[in-house]
Length: 250
Image 1 (spheres, rainbow, N blue to C red):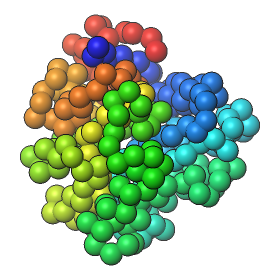
Image 2: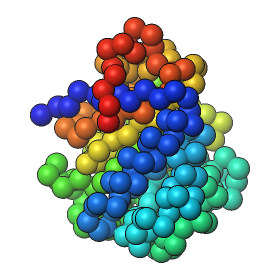
Image 3: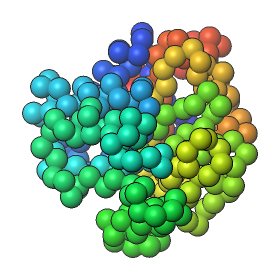
């Protein structure tokens, strides 16, 4: 059964981050172990990670059972200011007692982008215990995703070959941005018990309207999953015509 998107509209970006952090913390607390969390990069989820690492949250979470993964990464050094890993490290990992071997960083330093993608796919498959995804057994407990103004999510950009990849677990995305990127493919993003989009700011309004309207030219609208998709959105990003019709509370 395909779920209709659930949209939670916050007053502003801070309110949205708090709502998402509360939902995610509760999900971790009540889950069995291991708990696999697939992370998004960007400024919007950063605040969620900071909240999870704050005293109000971190002491309630059993970090020993959490495994962290990334939906995409730029091919830059892991300590580079544009690294998604560095952002999560500084906001979350450095402040919580998560075992180092539970942090599954995309190995962008390992040769070519294609090599890094292959090594990351192998790590995912070791964790999962199989090279083929079973629809009845999701790889991730939760996948966090963002939304670009062009409708991209992870590093799946409009009109790129990566959108049609349904067999490989990972892909190198080259020539779209200044730096090459590694991204999970749709089947792996879809292999989640729940998917959580975080969207803030008026520059996302048009893309959000398109995705909620199921515009298949937008990569974020092309996820094919039976898992619930939750949208945590601030009021600035919410299209006016959608706001009145999407007041569901998560």
